[in-house]
Structure formats: structure tokens, C-alpha cells
Image 1 (spheres, protein in one colour):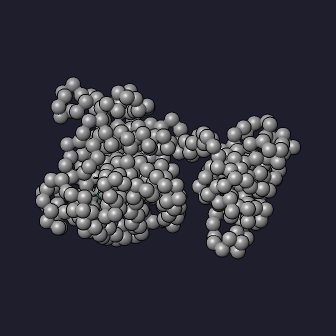
Image 2 (cartoon, helix red, strand yellow; image 1 turned 180 degrees about the vertical axis):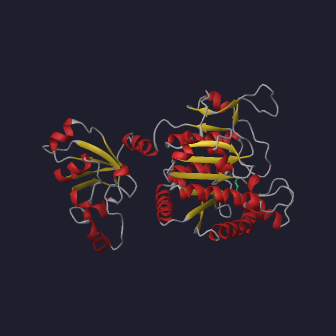
Image 3 (cartoon, protein in one colour; image 1 turned 90 degrees about the horizontal axis):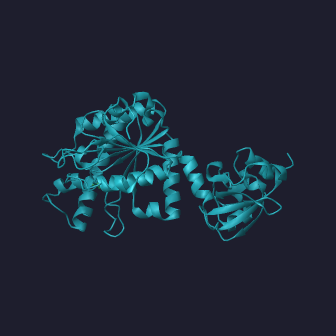
Length: 390
Ligand code: GLU
């Protein structure tokens, strides 16, 4: 299905939070193995242009292994795990240095975040990484992310930054993910082998036919092929995030997308917040429940967060990040949400003002027991409103 795109209709132009992923083949010169400086400067200018328009930007950058192997004199071809770990250690510091120089000379603070698979798969680490990204963005820094290849082992690594970038987009509730690649998008078949291959501009649903178009990529420095890009698209769209595969080689690769350059867009059926809420509402077994007073119920129905002050009781065993039910005083389940405190801490702060949390618990957590972005009303219509007598 193809719909001509004008620059203003690009999801990029509307995005509040954008994740851009660049692959090793773009970042490093195939001949010299060095960073493609002029190209990288043009990319950075594109990112700063997005920021000037008030989009928050996260960059996921590969290249550590490609840069490090040259420095260590490791020959071309597949590396053993410990060789790629060593190459990553040497290359990552070079990569970080390049980003620091390029961004700080333009008055932007750069932050390096190295993630492992576990940071996105284990709930506690996921929440920690999410909070760190949120804080960096709110302080105006530009996070540059890579997999922590030095500690990632064969069994627990992404190995490709396409899926890592999609997880980051999901974690950060980004509305747009751009995978800059050595191909300009998705074709019905490999265009190098099949002359009848046609280009796909827009994917509204990832069907088995779309998945079958995956194939393997010809690039020998990065590890992601089209197949991993489609896996990444699955993660992104299910998190409500638009994803685009576009050619990264030309200078100003992001600006070119907005100017209508050819690329493939994967379109989600919901916004990031709606996708998250669907997921929360669909939790099969909430870990526990909190009962709230009528004032808090009224606040929830008005679209506000649940504060500790409005909680009367808590039951069940839950940790920060678990989904819990929110009950009215008559026991009816009104909402579900991701709770910011464990059952033990919730019991200590319920009924108390948010400003007292630090003195009660000894650390400064969130002001909300459940933030409104993490909360979904199950039946927002009349029955709930009647309970508050409005
Ligand atoms: N994390 C790897 C690196 O920085 C690259 C993974 C990939 O090629 O996608 O070298």
C-alpha cells in the first residue's frame, strides 16, 4: 500500500520524541575503518534541527566494534566473542569521544548510555533505564546509546542495534524511530537479486508476507539485516511508535526523510500512551490492589494521577513497576496502573502527603503512587462517576 507523503505529513515532523539509529556501515569508512566525520557532522546537524523544533532526540549508535577492531589490528571476518568484546571496549571510547566533541562544540550535552539485553527484559532494570533516559531528556542532554558489548555475552546480547533501538523507543515512549541503513527501505524481494522487486512505502500491518520479505542484508560490518529491522518494527509499532527504514549514506539523512526521500514507514495503530494503556489494561493478573478514597477517585476520573494521600489500603505483594488494581471503597475495580512503590513502601506512605515521602521512606521517590500515564480507567463511564456522587 502506498500513499505519497508530503514533508509536513511525515511522522517525523510531528514527533515529540525521536530515536535515530545509525549503523556501523554508515559511521565508519569501509576503506580506512575511521569515523566518517563529514557525514556524522551532517547527521548531528539534522538531530539538532529536530531539537530546535522541540523534539527530544535519542541517538542509538553502533560502530564500537568496527572502530575498535581496526585499532587492535583484528583482521576482517567474524570475530570471536572475546575479540568483539575487546574491540568494543577500544571502539566505544573513540565513539563517545567523537560524539562529545561534535555535540559539545554545538553547546549540547551528550550522555553515554550503554545497555544490555537484561536492561530491557528485566523489569527493575527496565524501569531504572527508563527513569535515567527520562531524566537526561528533561535536563536537555542528548543520550547516545549502544549495547554494552564489552560485558554482553553470546547468550544475553542483542547483537544488533535495530532491536536495541526499538526497545529504547519503547522504553522512552518515543513516537518515532528512524533506522538509518545501507538500504533505503523494504522491497517485496531482494532488489539486488530480483529485478521484479518493488518498493514498499508504508506498512500498516506486519503480516507473514511482510516478514517473508526480510531476507539477510549484504552489509558486512553491522549485524542487523532486514529481518532484524522487521523484528524491530514489531516492537516499535506495538509500542505505538512509527518506524522508518531509510538510506543513511547521503549527508543529512534525517532531513532528507522529511523532505520526502524514499523510505519505508511502519505505522502503529495506536499512540505510545494508548499502546501502553492497552498493555496495562490487558494484564491478566494484577499483583495486588490499592483501595482509594472518593476524592482520589474523582481525581482519577478527571484524568489525574493517584497520589499516596488518596490511598486507604493496599493488599497483595507487589514491587515497583508491577501492575495493580485500583479499587473504590465498595471494592469495584475502577482502574489499573503501574505502581511506583512496593507494597511495603505503599503501606508506609498511604494517606500521607507526597512531600512527606522522603522523610518516611528515606529516599525521594515519585510524587505519585500511580502516574496518570501509567494508569488506565477500566470503565470511565457512569458507574464510576456515580461512586463519587457526581
Ligand atoms: N553494538 C555494536 C557496535 O557498536 C553494533 C551492533 C550492530 O551492528 O547493530 O559495534
